[in-house]
Image (cartoon, rainbow, N blue to C red; front, side):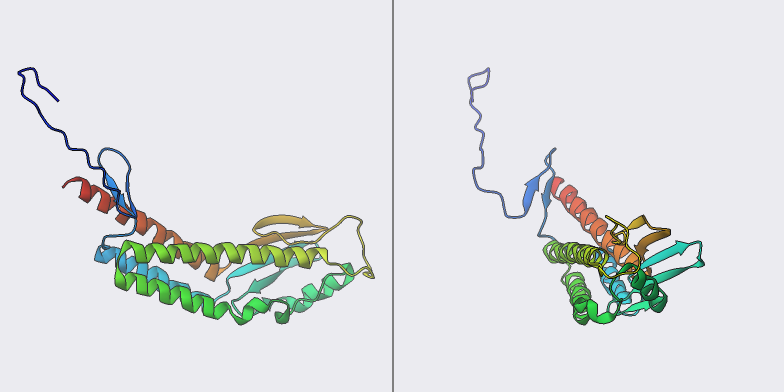
Length: 230
């Protein structure tokens, strides 16, 4: 390029490919998704988030509450990592009249492996915090996402089968009626109001995931801004 005085100025344009995991988001800020180390506070937060998930090994993860005029105190079903709990006998008695299957632990084979899933997630998160690199934490976040998607789908599939596979010999039959419980939130089932919500373990799990995700993106932004200064 020639200047007004006839002198020339050379401009070097790099054609080398970007490093894997590195992207430019504007204003010269380059975000490295996989490299770079976490601040010790962020590593501690990731470790605490991972360790808190162990609560699900002894606290209920999910619950379904049923309210009806004949049960003013309500009925509830709690789902732990390895069993059902709550007013199971009363719910089974009601379900018998409308042809629904009996609730028992053996109907949910995932109970046998769920504890190992939590062992893996907790250990994976603690290892990621110990390594302290973005790539390690990101891999753990992908693992958490995969587990959450699987758990939601598995619960939906179980509820669908439970609410649609009805005994044709049931004493009470309502044409076109299915009794699939809500995946989350409220649903009217005959004269029952059904509520499906996280229990203690579920809330801890969601908060832990939120802390881990926020911490990762704070570190990602911090690393990108730091890199832009050089």
